[in-house]
Amino acid sequence: MHLYKTMRNFLLDFDYYIDIYENKIHVFNYIDILKLNDEEIKLSMPNFILDIKGKNFSVKRLEKREILLEGALEQVGFIKND
Image 1: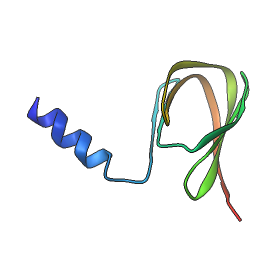
Image 2: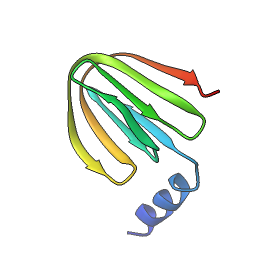
Image 3: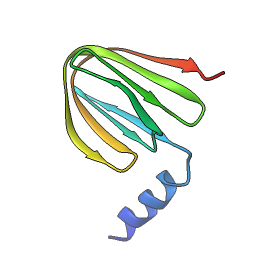
Image 4: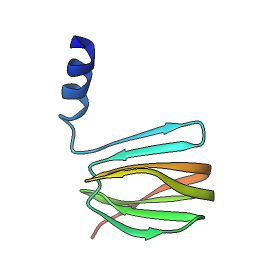
């Protein structure tokens, strides 16, 4: 359990983090969901907009400021906030 707490504290020390796995993407500490459908997801992040494109997206887990998506990921982009 000690390793879990150490890793969690390490990861939560950042403003946000994005993990990409096979057919899954996990985003922590997003501000708002701007667009959500089965082909595109846009999340407002602290300093940019995260633009995720692909096919067959579905939300597997949704918690306060944390989301886990599943689908065929094709493109991830960052749009600078003005």
